[in-house]
Image (cartoon, rainbow, N blue to C red; front, side, top):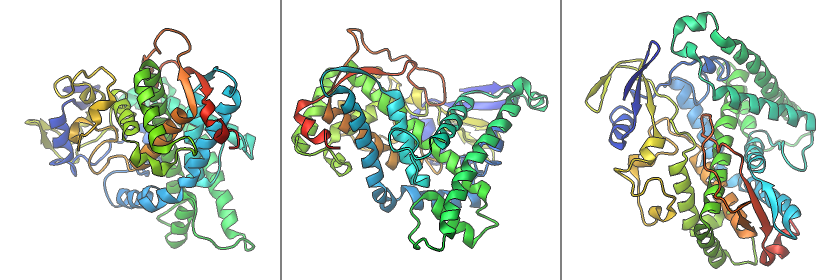
Length: 440
């Protein structure tokens, strides 16, 4: 679908065949990102792994992000972090629901889980729940995150009509500048705190344990290349890409399960038969819980974390689906439309996790994390967090809707299509699991 947003030509991809052509034949050509105003301020002049133009800087950042956060070895080393945060969530819910069904608000709890996991990996800090060391710093963090997600969900007309940028139509650039100063101050404080610890002569030298540690080690070797701005920008992109997406998917999955108690029962039976009731589910168990992964996949199909994949921009003229696409065109892949296409999915609007059973590579009809060179490098982490959290919630608690009516599945506004109304559910700790949960 060819459109024009102001002076900018836009191509919207809504078919798997066109998506495949984008990420195979044209993968290198489409590896660039449009230079949007938000990238100037929040991505430190387009110098993050998400916004950097295709080239040496992007390749280096991608390699570092993969090695220091998302490689199999690093994911394994952070397994204890994920386990601790999920168990903290379970403990909090248990304290409220060990006697009888209690109404609980899920969104803030799940978001806290996701943010704590990412911040522990990035800076060995947690800002939600019990055990928060610096409440003032935690409040600043929450304010920054709220403002970043709010402005990221807004469209800047100046990105499409250049003269509106000159006059700062709607004060968008002024808002970005104000937010950038907030983000910069918060991120710089994180860096300085870890830098100070590294310089402490009484501190034993140890292997880099956090993402910031790793980046500072690289900075010591090449200070002109790995600047503080590069580090700060990638802290922010990590928080944006690694938190709201996982949290939103878990919330959608729970909403869908409440509306389909038969699916919830089947998932619980799978957990009980494979894990039993003498220990809590662990991340290493997920390989033996294929139906849990089917539920996650079906949730991502219906409500992909990014309904429109991050925009691409061809570095030279190319051809997609037989159509000429000029250099500088914004290319948007509509994953939401592809995932609900009745030509390639049976009953596309129905929640049927079993459709993913015994299915191999879904190719370009299932692309929740994108495809090609610029696909999300954190899909492995996201699947681990979502799988462990969902399996633990199902194993440890009984769930039902607040009333007789089905949970409203209306979509809200934003880049990650959040559930319009935060999920509320009735929760009660399973008596069979009481002996395990009460001692967490």
